[in-house]
Image: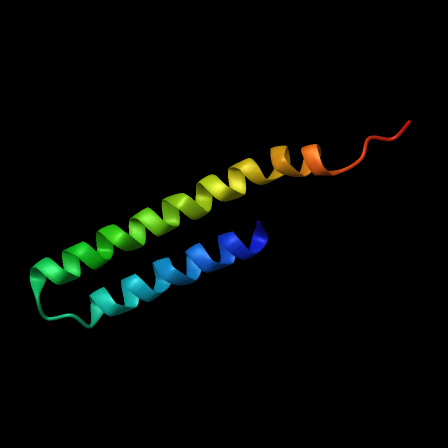
Length: 61
């Protein structure tokens, strides 16, 4: 799960970086939208992480 969040954040940063160096307006816009999508997916993955961990960890008796 943590690897997913790291991957998604890295992809968001990569898209932002590519958009910054892009001279085509439409392509830059698409890359920025992709970056926002990756960032949103990373936030969602982080938000669901505690619930998933509770399902995996054994309960104490």
